[in-house]
Image (cartoon, rainbow, N blue to C red; front, side):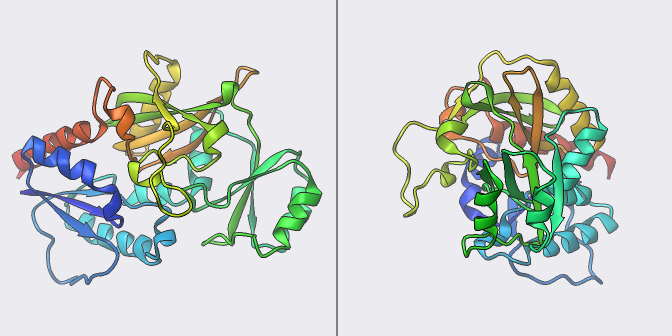
Length: 310
């Protein structure tokens, strides 16, 4: 039995490959950018780790989401063990699903309305207090995320060529939650266990806060040489961790990252669930645990448990 890593972005995979090799794990990558499924054949024996990203279409991998759905349907129909399985895809690609599920679990989320298409954005925004932010329902990488302090600026934006059309046609209007000290927090979890928390400097990073080394590039594609936007949040121990772990278990999010904002008014507002989580190398260098190493160890354990059942 091998471990199969299903993903669509080779630039994000090297830290995991290194962790697998360090752990002595045999693995194979399945790139979900093209391929063929023979529905009359059975998948290979092994376990399958799904790392689909909601932002895959920004890398010209337009069909990766639907291909991933098809592959996971095929795998699960044959009883194969999938880590972050078929249901997790829908959580990854829909912020509406994330927010409604978090709210149903009793976790505070920002007030949000979802607008279909472009024509009603202005009229719907008139029902919403300013300031507010926009974002894409199928997001990642800060897609469509902008801050608007007044309706006139918003009207100019949606009527301009700068308007970013969401891939699924759904734009979210969301209350702007001011972070205390300009920082957001991201909690990393693996196997329904807490790994560590990081802070992200929203004042410098804006809304594009991908922690992967491959993301820290300028507009010309060159690596950013300034101090990282991310830092380890040492000694973080808050009841929200257990609530997020309970949410992860309920929705079978075996590997995930959760982003939230602590406000000066005392709210703790969770606004993003990421199921293809990446890790910042500067944080990894000093963290008490390694995210990729925890994933390798977890997959190794799942493989052993799956093998014992065969």
